[in-house]
Amino acid sequence: MSSDADRDGDARPGPGRAQRDHWERTYGAHPGMYGDEPSAPAVRAAEVFLALGARNVLELGAGHGRDALFFARSGLTVTAADFSPAGLDQLGARATADGLSDRVTTAVVDVRDPLPFADASVDAVFAHMLLCMALSTEEIHSLVAEVRRVLRPGGTFVYTVRHTGDAHYGAGTGHGDDIWEHGGFAVHFFSRALVDALVEGWTLDEVIAFEEGDLPRRLWRVTQTRR
Image 1 (tube, helix red, strand yellow):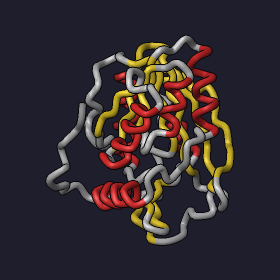
Image 2 (tube, rainbow, N blue to C red):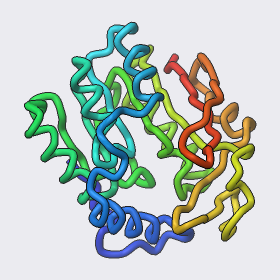
Image 3 (cartoon, rainbow, N blue to C red):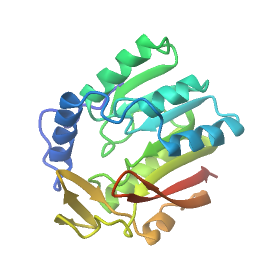
Image 4 (cartoon, one colour):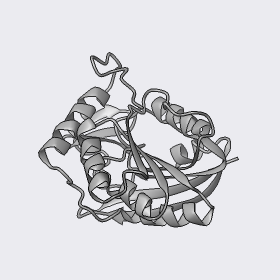
């Protein structure tokens, strides 16, 4: 399954197309750039998903797959979606090498488009720093509505975002709408008001602050359940 709407051109405003090309080059130049260990949010999300009896998970922004492969090793069936074929090729090769190809499916998806998955078809959705990429506020709202559509009632969505308390907020090149580009990577920094605005039709379970990396990046891990 893939979304090919903008492969041959993208007239939409904003830095999204440039960012897609930037990530494709980055994954191509630095295979496995985030290493093999899962992210801390993925470890926590797996605990939540398994405790709720989830069997399958959709990961948005899966990249080269460190978290998707962790979910598969934990016993979940995973659909790993990303807009970078290079990252997904690395993920697929690793899944095959690790004997996990029966649990992992990859899909080239641009989350600015409707998700190419059926209504109420997944138990859980995970997105680590995907929502805070170069997406407008309108696109973020549309994406969360799509996540709600593909989740089964009672399904859980765990996502992480860099927020406006991060050291890079306001630094670099501003694109408007709280999007700032630093070192070639554009980030939409979330306010708490935006987090709260995204829970219509959901139950907000928790918002947890944490730090990651050397800067460190300051993030929220948000867990919400479809009503």
